[in-house]
Length: 121
Length: 103
Image (cartoon, rainbow over all chains, first blue to last red):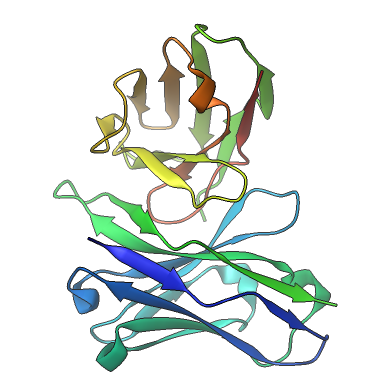
């Protein structure tokens, strides 16, 4: 069974750093891109970026301006999202998701983690 | 960057109704659009990919159509479990703003 298990909620102060995780299991972790999706309080879903665990190739939403950064550790089938300097605007629920590639060339997020709430206050 | 405009932002419906949600993209994306259902406290769920392909296990009352820049999600015979927020997504990045389907 495909599962993405995310780390627990974080409460941080502005200026602090944090790293949240997403552990994949039940499939070949290195062969599927992992995406990150943000939902700020009361707002919609926002695509943040994707990373390919095999070689850490990544694509970011242009407006992110360098934070957060995505990384992976293939040896433990885990993807990460890392901030060095948190801001109040980073307060959100963060989801990881597996990106499924369709033979037509389309992609979608077919399996999702349960979400990690990051609160910056 | 391809923009995705979803409408309406919310709608009220009753059990048994037929509901239609639309998405428009700022440039042609062929049929590269996905639809998700999102309930409070849960992870989003993929309903339809590639504009009209139903994800495994999703009830057949959900259907998608469209190509180019205009796309539609239809829910036939709305069920109590369908009250949620629905999002379209241009396959490679941006989501629409969401449509909250309320009782």
